Amino acid sequence: MLTHELTIQDQQGRIDKVLAEAFPDLTRSHIQSLIKRDRILVNGEKIKNKYQVKTGDQIEVQDSDTQPTELEPEDIPLDIVYEDDDVIVVNKPQGMVVHPAAGHPNHTLVNALLFHSPLATINGEFRPGIVHRIDKDTSGLLMVAKNDKAQQSLSAQLKAKTNTRLYIALVHGNIKEDNGKIDAPIGRSPKDRKKQAIVADGRPAVTHFKVLKRYGEYTLIQCKLETGRTHQIRVHLKYIGHPVAGDPLYGPRKTLKGNGQFLHASVLGFKQPTTNKYLEFEAPLPAIFQKTLKWLDTQTEHG
Image (cartoon, one colour):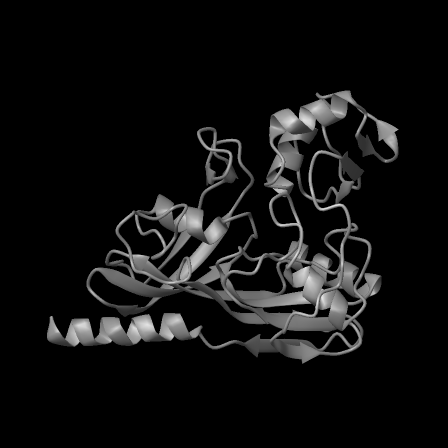
C-alpha cells in the first residue's frame, strides 16, 4: 500500500483540491473515493469530502490502488555535489524521477539515495528526505535531508523563502524585456489532469527572470523561484508566450531536440541545519544543453 503524508502549512481550501495539488499522481475524483472509503485520515480521524484543511493538519492517504508497494534501496550512481551529517546536495540527471509514485515504482532518486545513506523519515514512507522536487526531465540541484531535524530546518527555509533557487532555461521566442516578474496563481488544469495551469483559485506563484542571451528565435534566461509550485517555471513561461524549449507537456510540437525540456536547476543555496552557515552550490549545464547553445551560437553568427 502506498501512503502519502502531508502536513498543512500555507495551503487552504477543500482537502481534495489541496491533495490533488500536492500529489499530481492523485486525481480529485480518486481522492474523493478514498475519503468515502475512510482511506484518508486527518490527525488520525476520518473526514468528509468537504473538509477544509487547517494549518498543522497531519494528513495520511492510504491508497491500495497505486504502486509501488515497497521502497527498495538501489545501487544507482549519484552525482553528489556536497554531503555532511545533515544534508546531501545531488545533481539530478534528466530522465530520473525524484520519488516513487504511480507509474514510477522504482529506479528513482530516492531509491538511489537510500542505497547511499539513511534519510529523514517525517515526510512519509515514499518521500524520505525529500524537501523539494524537480521534474523528471529537468536536471540540476536538490537538497535532501538525512535526518528529521534537517528536514524541518530545510522545509522551514523553503516556507520562509530564505534559500536560493536559480534555474537556467532556454525558451521559445525573443524576450524583449531584460528582466521581469511573473505573478500568476497555479493549480491543476481543468482541461488536462496531467497539466498545471494558471487558474483563478490556484495557489500563489511568483517567478522572477532575467535574460542572459538572445538567439533570435530563442532566449536563454535565468529564473529565480519565489514559490515552488508543481511545474511552476514551465507553466509561467508558457503563460507569457515563451514556453521552455523541448518541453513535451507545455511547449509547441516544433521545438529543439533534447532529453526533455531545456531547464536546469543551476544554483542552490541554504543554511546548514546545524551550524546555520549559508552554503551555496552550482551545477554546470548538462552536455546536451551546452551542445545546443553552441549550435545556436553558430546559427546566430551565420544568420
